[in-house]
Length: 230
Image (cartoon, rainbow, N blue to C red; front, top):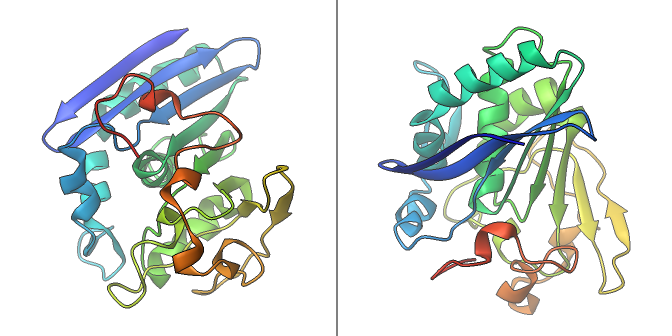
């Protein structure tokens, strides 16, 4: 059951909140890059403070896109949590949407009473998102209920490159390690390390954008009628 949608132009973001009664779940879903203007958000890689007055750095474009709509998302989510007190809350997204799902989940567990125990996060093809401090903060709050799915040779999951900005991945990586769909569970770390036996074991020049556009055999829903997507 669809509850709330948003399509923001400045800063740009798209998404929805829906209720899945059969699964007893409230879903907060963020769309990936499917508008040309979203490339501006994608390219705004340099960090902004996640918490004002601190040095905790997070991908500036994604932080802006989340903060532009987070108040409305919070209001609608709090109402649904009150109406369905036994339902879990899942944050999800692909690519840019995965990064926004992570930021929004952390924002909202810090803001909404009772959400911490009900939240879980699933992302697909998520890029590196924040510095060591942000990653540590995220892992403390949500690392044990987050599943960061990476496809065999997806190039986006190793972006932005370390030589450009020193961002880290948060826990927990689920790497689809071959075309048969076998999954390797990445070993969690408490510092800025990525499991060398998971997605980072693939050389950059062995990667293809096709692996980013096709997760679990299906294209992300936000790609279906888009003029542009990745």
